[in-house]
Image (cartoon, rainbow, N blue to C red):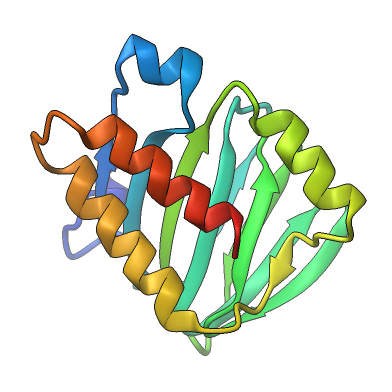
Length: 168
């Protein structure tokens, strides 16, 4: 199965990702990154997860697909954003006729469960269209660049960028 995601000619996706290890301070005090990446689907496929201690934010850069979350189906198209609690089961599927490119980040923080609950109480949905899609691209790029760096302030900067993601 690992071969399917290894960026060879047989893989179903081409991806670039960073598995991030935050400091113990960041894990206990800040919003912190767990993983960030970008994938380009080469073939139609479904990705399913559940019971992760993580929140997922992703944006559809190109293409289209479907998200199944909390037993509801959501159509996704270019520039749509997804924000979900990964404790709950979810799956997303690229459209076989319009393969997608996604940019994502998994993150967590000690206050994030209550922030997400407040988001939902106030009408926040798992799928939304940002006012300016360039902002999501810029935030993702800043997160990726910072996570890939050796900047001694990176945990604080990542917290800042993730806070900005939450205000989208």
